[in-house]
Image 1 (cartoon, rainbow, N blue to C red):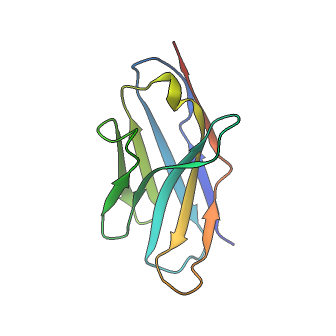
Image 2 (cartoon, one colour; image 1 turned 90 degrees about the horizontal axis):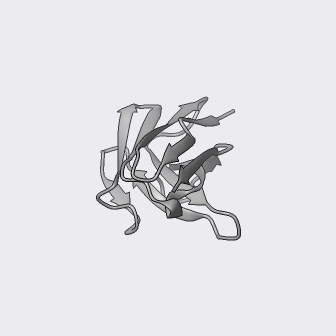
Image 3 (cartoon, rainbow, N blue to C red; image 1 turned 30 degrees about the vertical axis):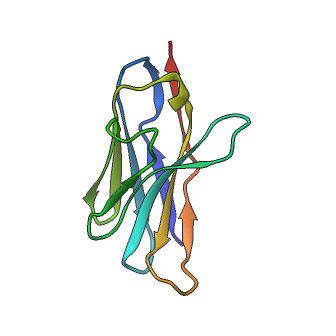
Length: 118
């Protein structure tokens, strides 16, 4: 059984920084892509950043140049968030998806709360 666990959320002041981590355990077919999504109250879940097994990264426009996704090891990725703004307040979810075209499986973590105070 695949488990996805996020950590590192919390309360931070406007303009501050936080680092989120996502660890994956259990059997998952490789290669896989790791993504971060977030969801604020009353809004749809939105893509934040992603990294493929070969290190290719992608970012939402609203976080580009402020957030950095990196792969610490084969089963762990991090999201460094700098210059945090009020709009960054959300529950952040890690998503892991098999990197294949036919019936890719994906897994979600429970989420970690990030709150930016003004």
